[in-house]
Every structure is written in structure tokens, then in C-alpha cells.
Length: 235
Image 1 (cartoon, rainbow, N blue to C red):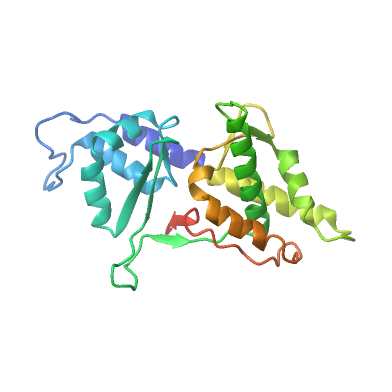
Image 2: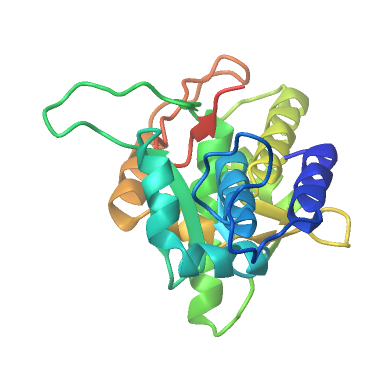
């Protein structure tokens, strides 16, 4: 999410309003049933890829306290709210009809490129290893990620410049998705706990196996469909 969007959300959350007023009416003709702070939390949930207990403590608190009300509003839009208390993350996902078929959707699936998939698998392993070693937060450097992508290049590859650029674009894409969290140190990132939720063991194994297949030239690579993590709001 860009800086302007983040600023808009901050203004939305901190704007004056009768959050605890007995009346839920906030404007003329308002038929809403939620208090102002719960509505603000709902907007953040809709706009963000995911909500984090650590990064968004106010939204997380409201989400936990008003989960049923928020789920009801999301269900009305054919969305479900998934909450993982162990990792302190919550995200929305498309609901699937019981009898098959599809619902109208506000989200769309954007498949990851091969470079992004390589990095997702790598980040999942680094994150799990760091937690096993007792780390509360796990960091990774940009050069390490670019080098990881390079290990998948076929022997005899001569155009490593384009390959490195494709890897850098993949890093930037994961930053934009808040899977990699920027730190004050340039080129150093914190791995978000969302990586554990996005890549459960079964899916991780599937992706790892797919990466063993032949490599396509940068820019022409097949895309890997990580359906849960790729759910985004339609623009």
C-alpha cells in the first residue's frame, strides 16, 4: 500500500467522531448499525491485505471485540474473515458457495511470478528457522533474496543482469504486499508472520516441487497461483 493510502487510513482512524455515542447515526440518513470505531476498522480490513495485531493494535482490538459484527458485514459482501490468533493476523477471503459455483467478488486473484514464488518459499523457511532458534522477529537482506533467486537459474545463464532485475522487482512486490516489512536500514526487511498463514505445509511442498521444473526466461516465466495470498481488492 502506498504512503498516501496509509495516510488516508491514519486520518480515517484518528478523525473526530462519536465512537462511543449511543446513537450509531453519523450523518444524515445514516442507517448503519455499527459504532464509528467499528466502521473504521471495517474499512481498514477491506483496504488492507491483512491486519496485524502488532502493526495495527487499535484495529486488532476492535476486530477481536466486534468479530461477529464485522464478519456479518463481510459475509454480506460474500467475504469471510480469517483470524489467526497465534500469529496475530487477520485477513479477508472470498466465500465459496456450498453448492459450487461462484459469488460476485470484490477481490481478484493475482498470481505470483516465479521469482516471487521462489522468495515466498525461501522466506517461509527462513521465518520458521528463525522462530525455531528463539527469535521473536526474523530479518532478511535484499541481496540474500536476489542470490536465492539466482540459485534457480539454469546453468550457462549469461544474462544475469535481467535476472537480478526480475528478482529485485519480486522483492519490491512482496514489500508492497506487506509480506516483507521495510526497516530503517536500507535493503533490510522484516518477514511478516503472514508468511506462515499464506503458505501452510501442504501448499509449501507443492510450490517447492513446482520450482524444480525448468526455468523460463525472466519476463516469460509461468506464474504460480498462490490463491489465498493473491486475493486482492479489485481496483
